[in-house]
Image (cartoon, rainbow, N blue to C red; front, side):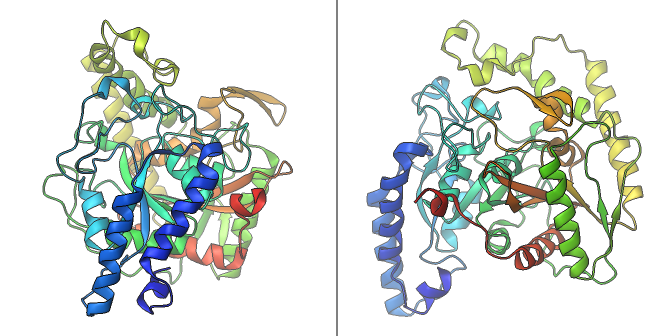
Length: 455
């Protein structure tokens, strides 16, 4: 799209109109959008067209529409994060990530749906309602970036910005057959996000791009990455070319004894074969000492902040959506527990990075299951019954340890559902993961879209 706009083969106005037509056709069934900015997007597209005619310098994304998860501020619009407790809020300025997209010439098409306060792996709330998976409306697109993933998978948007605190980019990407990057904390600013991603939330939750192809993730990352002084986690790490010579891949087919569906294991093996074709040895890798990493994540991400959330909704609990209440822990928390879990997190991170000295990239499943039916919570996998927490253990590992990870779709299940894999890297080596993801996609070949499946 960018090349066609620059070559004057495609008008930004026609490009926006085509996406608005797709939204009109697909969104009633998918319900991915909170707000569609049709008039504003067309006005911005006309301005982009005029800039082309005048021969002005163009940004990386000039004239291309994008979408924004409804947890980022967009000036003049509410940032509800799926919650009625945010009624009356109006953003005064764009979030840092939104401002960077606009500065590169992107056109914001609209904002996409989330669960209440981003607290669930299902995207549903009392304001916009439930978002469905474009591949199968009886199934969820995942959460909390389910609206963004569904919009992109349904070809209503080419890509956009979302967040990931426990797989919230990578799980919806896996469920919806698209690509998603959870960057290293500090690479992409999260200023202007709600809930705030300062300390301690920013230890695990980051802003990152979603798109249908890893090549587009790389482009979006180039536009979004960079130091932001208002973000306490922001790191002044410049974009750098990846070093792939002598690279070895560690293949971790499942998280210890927690089973994964055989089709997902097969996708991991297929991805390993593709990487070997690229000249990267891919050998079995089973890191030691990470067995409790998901439990530490659950404490830091769910148990610790729960008291503040309960205080926030105090006296209005009946107005809270089930997606929030389902995960709202009531466990009493002590300062000693906080310090113990933070120390355990740091020790596991240091241990894994020692084990990754000669194996800089791990290839893993995103989850033990493909997209599940709405409100489903138990599955029989490999003869064992597992719940959502067990199924998502591979996804939360990069969050609790502060590592970058990228999801790429590899194949389809027997039920016709997408299956993705994730590549997990060392801190600040995001560019290496994106390079490998692009090469994976090249060997995989074209991937069927939800639009083509349901057209």
